[in-house]
Image (cartoon, rainbow, N blue to C red; front, side, top):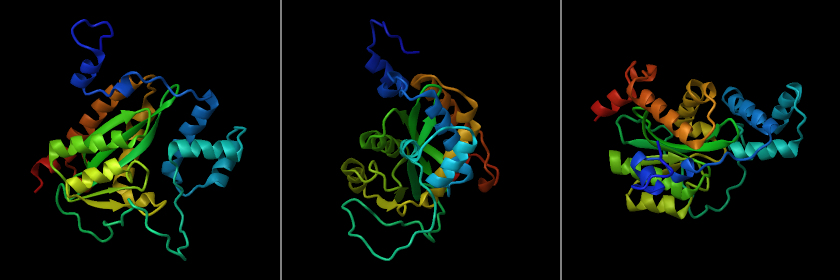
Length: 270
């Protein structure tokens, strides 16, 4: 696909024409011991079954499976994956609001049309000898994936670029929801939304369920594609996801959409 020794086009230009990020093309798998990669894959699948598991329960589960792992190592792997344990929290005090933290606007909101509310998030993707990250933007009313990208790092600029491309292609939403991750509280991300006059909504701290629609997308992508394939490099991962998201938008029918596809619903929605 990309020709290393091409005399006519540079690698940069070829990546631009193929809509492939250079970080994905040049990606070398993150070096982790084989056992750590096995553990992280188990944890990734386990999260969709028991998102309420914390360090102690995960530790017991992994020990029962035969892994010799301590809390310190487990917590590091949980941070890499972005594991957010779901549990009720006491709220006896209110801390000072940070500069780029915003309230959750979707509670009791009736979402009735396309481009009314978008959601954006990042997830971890296991590979044969490492891992990468996937960022995607979804229209909540139609479940249509408006834009996505893969990278070996989670930078604010990368997420902002994916969102900006989605806006340029599909128009702007009234509201966009995200978690409170550093990418979505950055000056670059917030600045784009303010410049576009888009309302900013953020999940409560540690409440992945607030962004439930994109969490369901992650579950679908992983169980229907990622866990069924073993990717060795960023380029093959990108090409595989390109085919999958085309299938997801154009062919995969959703019960919540009266068995229609996201593309059909998005195209005809008001």
